[in-house]
Length: 449
Image (cartoon, rainbow, N blue to C red; front, side, top):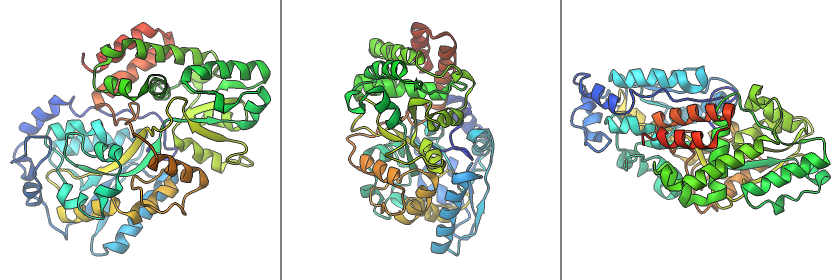
């Protein structure tokens, strides 16, 4: 995943003037270089934008929220590599910490609306960027950036589609975290007489958890519900695994009413899971829940692959022996994407330096430097696996062999910021009243329907 320090606390996008509202603000924010002469299809022409900037000698200002921990080490390694390749470019890192990334998003919103963007910034790709593209605040960089480093051939369809939320390539994905993981404790399953190979669907997992609890002292699953994102991501993964990619795509396209039975069924399965969670789920953070899994107090834990960073830091907790993972039941062949990227804003203060930076972000060298330290995998499929730990190497194999790479709902790729906020609010209510029908109605309404 992609947040600061611990990486994965609850992240809520501050709405960019509520979609259409930003477009109105953009229209009355005064003249300004790249904002005049926009293409009208969600991106501003590169020619217009380049003429507004300061050229190759201008300082490259990049904002991000990786201010410590694995993220801080990873981004510094990337900038070290960039400086080696482009020593003539003056770089100003301008990180914004806190708020699980929300503080940075608030800063960027204000700067974009004031026609004073940084050169680039850390952003979730996909539909998360629609408020910017709809307001002509991002530039089509297919020729200036994506035609370099063989990027088009090295990126699979899922990450490339996320880079073009409106049909134009406007950002460069740097990393991938996988969401549809099911982590399990092999010893607990062995003690319970449960085989991971016998769990084919999310609904099968209910019986497996019940068996674990009847045969051992462990919980079936450990879960944290102190924030809504963990339950929203669990629901989307259950939904995908139980009812398939086509049904999932129908929902994220805003047609939830067409898959009412399936969406409610997935909510009901999550509600059944609740019977096998730790009793204190509503007071735990995801890291505290993960510690319970590490301690052997649960058979299963669902989260993104960022959870494995804690496993590698735990004493006497070996991959393949004390912990292992499979694709969440029913999602074999799928690799649900959680990503960060760096877009090219209109009215760019350093267009030539920014092109160099984004070309570098999309290169083998940058992604080989950044991702092993971050605990993520590269979106390029030609990055050598040697620097990565065995778990990440397995994830890289799963990614390159995947049939499809669907975007995550809970982590912004599959939904606009406004829709995601609405879904989180509905999920927060769900974890207090467990009302399937009311939650489904709120989910449909989240898309403005």
